[in-house]
Image (cartoon, rainbow, N blue to C red; front, side, top):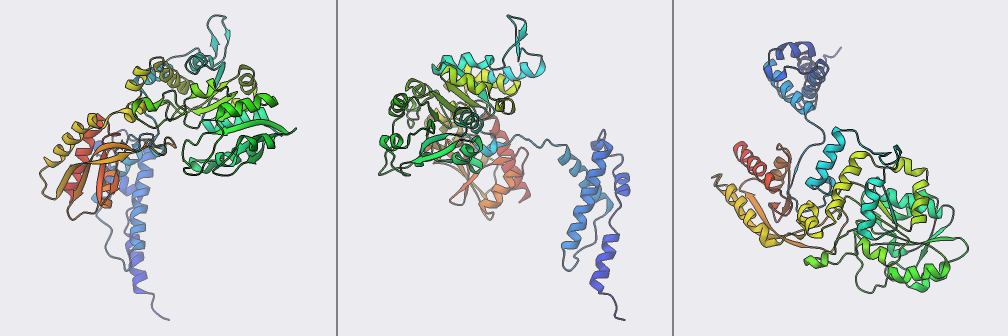
Length: 476
């Protein structure tokens, strides 16, 4: 009989020398850092530490080293406990220059909105209680009047996001019948959600007209028939078609709808209450303009250009909004009291546009002049240079920021950025190390430099950036 593979024998010997979980827990006893840690969490951390070392041994070919001493395992246990106790949803530093960064939580809330959330979270509220009548009320009263006041709409309601707003509106107004929409409006939003798929889920039947780049009023009119329930227009909020193009203005589509007794719905996507062209930015249609043009139903997001919490807002003719509100789907799509509180706090700021632009972070970041950001960029570059490491180069460069969140796709915002290069270390390695800092710093890479874009770096984020870079320098 042949002897067993000596490498396999050695591998088994090393695996057997791994500490048992009980022994590791005993070795960690007395560590004040672990005081008060729930036993179940300690056990989970110990198992993860031992399993990680087991995988390392199995992946080495040939086996490269003995398992470390038990004291090393004990230190790893403490590290694992810290990691497991850390919240999964964590603060990060957004240095990407993307203002409405979907992956980083989209819009930051104004302090007014945060105060409303805090009040609603710590106390009971009149969420569905009419204080005047002493009876059950509607949760939408918290924001309905505000939305109508700002937009000029007859009525309004709110659901959990704009995809939900489109879904419930189509399901209410066109289930089992046709919705006429231009081929150029069949957009896909983030997460592969597409207008045709949302429409199919609503039970409405899609009737495409025109071409991708050109659709005329006669295309809509030629498609209207006995089965037509609705004319739909979708704003190109996350892309643009340029060149040989034609779209039907909303007001013309409304007049066509009136002639045929058909409601017209517009999905604005991001939606805004502010005319950004007044601040030197690209023109974006406002909700007020859509309402004034006569759209019967308008849907838009609360957490993008509005700068509020995630929500889908529906405004329009009173009888249509009332029908949508009664749809049983509304129960599944409704928002909770904290979202309502944040939305109300945000909407109140829009009563004064100057105050809204000043206090809503998204609006402030989008409209802030480049010159106003430059002193902060220069100061941050100087702080990094003062770390005194000859390998580090930190300079200020003019780059472009983006709105993000599927909003203002053609907008390039000139911004002063701090670009960092570390001699002997690739930009990718620096970017990875920044992501592993505490708090994580999310930057971007351009021309083999790590870029910190001051348009999205908050003043309180500057210290963490300096600390993260200092640690990278220390660790070589």
